[in-house]
Length: 109
Image (cartoon, rainbow, N blue to C red; front, side, top):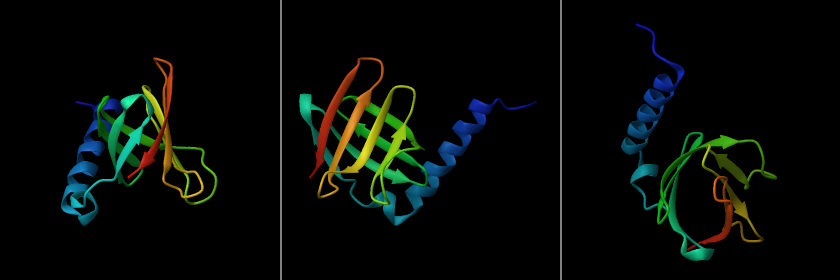
């Protein structure tokens, strides 16, 4: 029986999350981002994914093209796009919700 590509992707995601749980980076406290419009979330970065957990739900985003330099990174999924490492301090982020449309600016605590 052949697995569909989405089933394979889900399997790889589960393996990545489980592998991340065993490492120190997953167990370390995730940074908290506070945003406009009352949005708050924590972000955990594992391999080429960003796991966001907060006031608007839980999202797994995948590394995407974009960002300037090594300190800026972009992650997305069909629901949203997140840009990290922005601003002079590198502590700012922007979330772009595709379906609403909503754009919120955030700062890491």
